[in-house]
Image: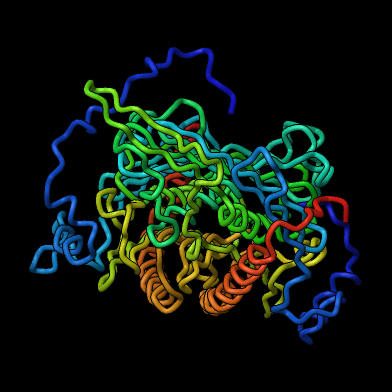
Length: 288
Length: 290
């Protein structure tokens, strides 16, 4: 991997101070499912942020946030905040990449201060894979044949990561693409769900997300899905953790139902964007 | 994978064949191509294997080294994957062309091995918080003939099965520094329990049906598919959708069910073959001479 020689890295012996935190005795045992569930859900079936297991965090969407970009969007899902900028369609940078259909270039980046552990300025392997996943998902939604020999760039920057960044990125990117007038088949809505042995948590926060641990029980996993509600098609599917096909089917059903509920919200945001654009155009015409 | 140019007629031919459960090479939709497997080829590695799935050829070498464990996980050893797409495999891998694919395979392998059910990394710990075994799994893709994910995962599982880890005794001294003693007998080694190590199964969707073990031509015809990591206990440890197309939720669910069944069968057959090879003892290595 290319080393960043232009920036000063911290000394190699530096490590996160959170490792010195006294380990809570309860936290050690909480790897077991029963205690894990107790930790995440109180006895009255309510999560730490007062949500029910099948409640998602409130969603905030806005477009036109980057003035220089063709289209842009900002999403806040609880404390997860990210920005997406869309540039294009413009000529392909490398002439050798000539292709009859349009191309999509996605860049997924965590800001260094966005996660609990500091991220590097350059894309690491995880971000490269997330960029690839995002690209494959959006390629299913965008009408690539409408801009041959051209490319569209989608840049995602995660400002704060409090769980389910890929899900928020999918929604934000498709909103940004739509506001940039890129022809699309349908909007992509992203959702994440955490599976516990006897429960499903929709839209997990970072503390609720699945982490690889020793001696993990079965049926403990994380699923992120990108769904196109009008076309009833899944364009992104990432699952990590131990599960079985029957449970995965249930998780998928929960996710698709939620995506159908969110679709009108995203469409409303898009509608407001267009109304604002038309209002601005009207004003400009009057000024002339 | 490799740039395959297919005419519309060829694509239609493949589509029709898949509908009738008869693929171009005579297989049914759920058949694998012939696999040639050999372990213990590389004398300098602690474990190695070479797996050839029809035209896909993968060589895996595992080297064990002592290092300090991750500060967040002081009780565990480490497993580091590295995939190298050789430029010989296909013209697209020239220079840095194969990097994206290598990164994806590497990352997906890591994800599928991270789930607690698969491999017990606590077995690799030598001294809590200070020394542990790190297994560097280096995967070399020699030839690309479609279905790289499956080939790589089977080769890695075989290599890990045969990996010999030297036994180390910790002799505590009076001072703070404990001393590590390597056993004098070079054959005094231990092996990891790889019973539950996952196998990856790739299912590509063509028309209304899905195929196991696609050839490069079939991959070209298909717009989407899933790669499923199935552990020895019929559990799914990681799933990823690949390709630029989309899938209906129902087809996805049935693909997952099929993948889980196919993966279990593949796991069982692989373990049987590895046991067979072990029992056959130290026969002459065939290597690349075939």
